Length: 300
Image 1 (tube, rainbow, N blue to C red):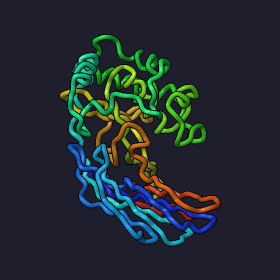
Image 2: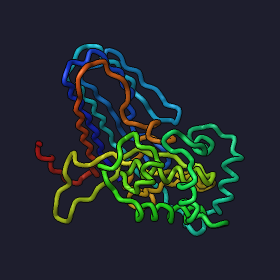
Image 3: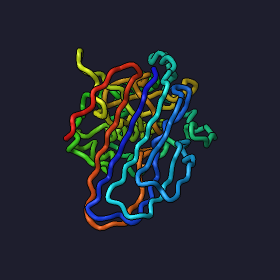
């Protein structure tokens, strides 16, 4: 499946911003499951300096500096991506989770796709007994890892309420876990914290999810959103994606933007600005399968 992606972020400032430095992670990655056919990031006003790089987890970054006063900053990433996920292994025939745990701790690979980086807690995904105990309910001794992880994913989907008002972008996993409310970022953080508490390598994935309009209705352009899910290292089967927000094993409806230990590693945009006053933020995301018609979202 080939997708056209558009991710447009608009910052509007109450007072002129005299200096801004931003790190942008808006270029999808090519991998065994997807190929980036074309990608471009534009910034308005035009940066005085820019630098392309590769982050510690293999993500492509663009660092920009804007040093002339501006009331509005527009950042737009556009990409064309071919998603071709390999067939999923049989969850019931996957290796025992304890076997994968032992392999992960024995691994010496420090590459971005190795398990070692994703074994340990972070500030957003600390290892805490309540979350570990919750995950452990799905991981009986000797149970196949993918079967157990899929059950954990489904339990999170059933036990937690999707509520955009319950958390913020900085909410740590234990707080969202206690509230049993949150969004995709929270559900991914909770699942990651539980898996790592059991000694399993789990990564945070930032990306996009194809949405399907109601029958007979066109897809609304710009009405999609960024998404987050979990990638679990399964030994010889590699990294397998699990989406606890939707209780889905990841295949061709998910497009990967970046992979890291938690949201802090893969935020699409971060940086600093120098200005007084408040700012407003507007984000528009469009995930368009090729040849599928779209209707612009009415102005608000």
